[in-house]
Image (cartoon, rainbow, N blue to C red; front, side, top):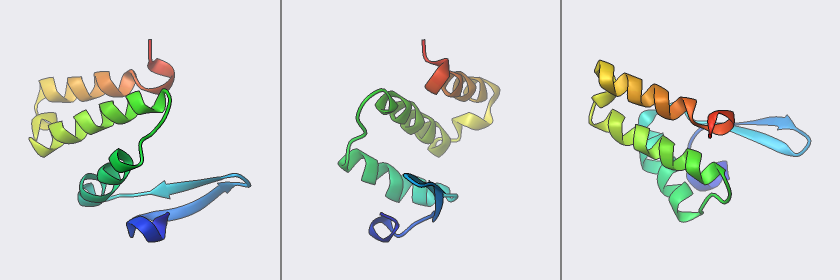
Length: 85
């Protein structure tokens, strides 16, 4: 996959899992998100992806830099994975 998207660092996590680490906002916004929109995430993780995309849009508008934006990002993050109600 890393050759397909040409971004990030790939680590072997276990026998059956790898971790892709992407550090630049540009790569996340311009490579990773379009890739994951094209090759859809299935299941409950799709809801996390939607929240992640929302946060990326807040960051593009610099809304995360004001208190209300920071609190919104924190609320979205807190509602992901095990925090989902």
